[in-house]
Length: 125
Image 1: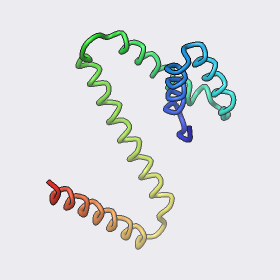
Image 2 (image 1 turned 90 degrees about the horizontal axis):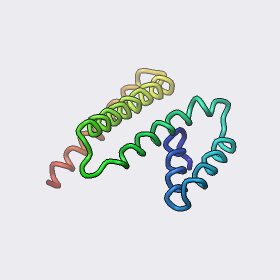
Image 3 (image 1 turned 135 degrees about the horizontal axis):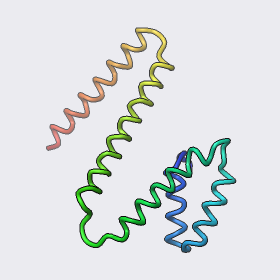
Image 4 (image 1 turned 60 degrees about the vertical axis):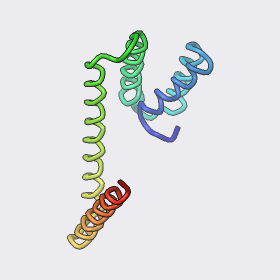
């Protein structure tokens, strides 16, 4: 449970729900809220957890393949996560790289790493 945010909360709840049932899962969630609480737990983790819980409870009721709307929603979530990771990477880079030479070295090594990975993919297929 080293991951921050609603992902760890949802994972904790899901594991307890599958193994022990609903009442212990709710009890475990309450313990998780108070043991792991920061100064703003309700504004950070609980809304995401409740949203994931509501979506999963509705998807669970569906029989057969998922509707196209669900696939579109999941695709949107994936795009949002990629965007957030990109924003975090840019913020980290602007805070940690202070001079132009270091910025050039980081950019050049990133390009070399991507090209190397691309060449490896081409050679293995």
